[in-house]
Length: 254
Length: 160
Image 1: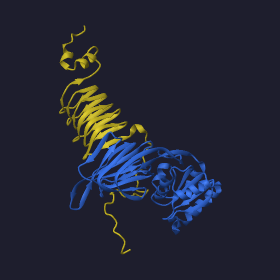
Image 2: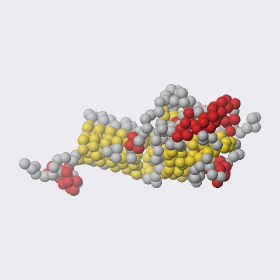
Image 3: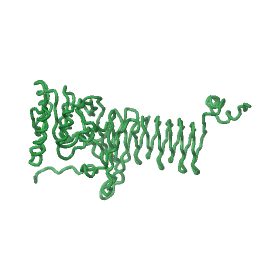
Image 4: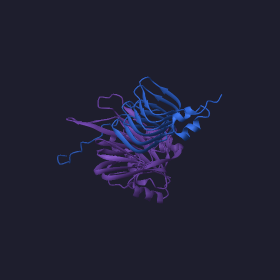
């Protein structure tokens, strides 16, 4: 039994045709199911737990990276299989999972090729795509063995499933891309060097694969995890192995 | 909208890139070709160990250990004992180095400490202050280690 969780942005007129085509395709495969819509006030955990109690075995998230992050970060421990139908822009995780954007994703879902995915764990909650510490004076301690510091502020991006894109500066035409690997989290540290009158300049990132790390700051710093921004003074980040049972595509990157 | 709070300005410099503008994704990576990169103004302190290749462009103090390749770039500074599978040094290393296979010292390399290596390649201009121990000569290897100096190795009578 399938249940589909649609993001609220799919109500927009421009997505009507693709959603319709997907629903037809899912009906053809015989895997159509109940549709629930996420709103700003919907708690994904409550509605999914409710549906599991009613006998749902597969929860399919329909939307983009933000939708997947919003749902899975709250329901990573749920006893069900997750699927993903990417629609529209901002779909970088779909590429990592080997799921094509649009109607073709229904084909991947129908094949039910399942993998257990690792998720990131930060201060008692999960994150799926990325965790982003906005530029701040922080120090990073890896696996309780070594400490990383910079002379000035640094920006930290921790990638679980979402690839990391960066440019050396605004004029840099080449976009550098690093795909995260399975079995580790990857931290990208970008120090800010030399404050000038037009602001800081970023250095090229340092890369550290890790399983456990701590970020400490003397003052509270802003953290964005799967689109949710909080202020923290200490972050403990771990990798939770094989937490999510997920339908993936053949062209996945792990 | 007039009364909306201002959006914080410390936004990241990397912007979401449209799929069309994105470069071709690389092939699937295994745990073997993972690289740890220490950037130019990053300082690492402690027991710095990695399962994959390490590239050092900044400074490291403590100890460095990798079973794979270590690359110390020009301008980088390591004040630590180093153990690596293979290494290429173009920066400064203060500490003993133990390299399993090949060690390459470029013209800008500065090494203060003992080196134990199987194969050594030194470019003209590289500076070394310390002992170099290369296993392979029968009868000298273990004695040299026990006695602790090169002089003692030279004193052993040649076996004819």
